[in-house]
Length: 275
Image 1: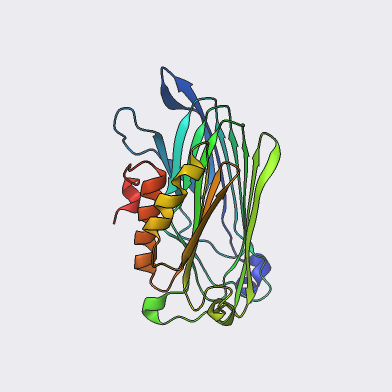
Image 2: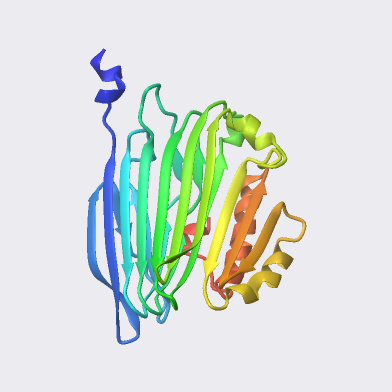
């Protein structure tokens, strides 16, 4: 039947372009374009707080063949916190379908600060996803970003027999690459995640990166917060990188929140994170 053929399945496309500027010591929306399934909400914030934006995928999740693109420009001296309204779900792909493709690019001007804090992505068995985040930042700009993944729905006993995931992060500071990071998982995900050198049986992973003049000074407090956890933290060249794995998605989320609190100077997480 025509409806069952992968090339004829309806797939989602979305585009977000947000530019923020500085006026009177406050960050404001200078330009906004939203198209297709991607939308932005701007929660109310306290006076003096960073501008917050929460992305929404109106398609209800990520399916193979979807194409999503986000571009963020933070002008000099701005402070933007970008998150997602909820955890994202990446659904099973049919045989022969192209991977979902998510491309994001952020440009940070002098003295700008971007917090890229999406909630976790839940990978269903058979999901197929290619995702890339590229950040171009000025020498004195700062960046806090996270990528959190949950593999399968443990509560329903789901097992990941097949997965096709490619996650890439590239950060350039002053035009020079300072971090090239990636996470690749293809084929039998459950077996791969069970290996000691990968996740030792954990079903959730996260990578957090802080690029800022003060990043290295936070290494010891972060390590203290991670004591007893399956996690590690290292710092160099004005950066701090944390990697963690967990068997319990709820505990995983709580540990992420504790680390982000340290990296954000004790400030509360966005309201959409608190449920």
